[in-house]
Image (cartoon, rainbow, N blue to C red; front, top):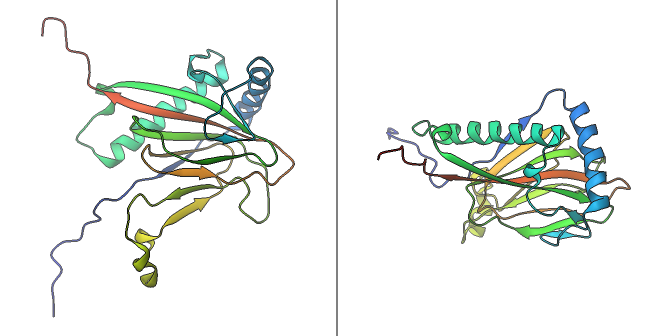
Length: 210
């Protein structure tokens, strides 16, 4: 009879999901601010296909609802960082955040991409049109490892090639920025709106006199 002496999950990729309670009023304000921004901002072309991507750093916007999302993003980033390593207090590091708003009309989607240079990426979901079936509005993550197709036979969740789900309004999803992800086309008649952000940590500034 063999005796197990250790069990490790090597090279795992964390993905965390958080729910914002009482998010309804916040999302109404964000949708209103989003409409105002779209009227004054033609947007830029990034991973968006058929949708709108705001210009610049959304978190420079001092509107109360945007500031509230920024605070929620920081809370989620700190919580995720503590979850993967209790030895580092993220609040002792300098944190740079860059955010933008996405609006996917019917047929709009986001092509597969990563966010090079950042530590964490995240998304706050403002509106997610309801649908009973299909993949409309789902986000999908692709396994960053190679040479894994032979694991399909064993059906091990840790070695599946893809993971997709449809986040709900008021939900925050956090994941490492190197992880390839994309968003399925919006197959509803309503707009899908989210706020995405990148978080990059830097070493703290040296104290005066050091």
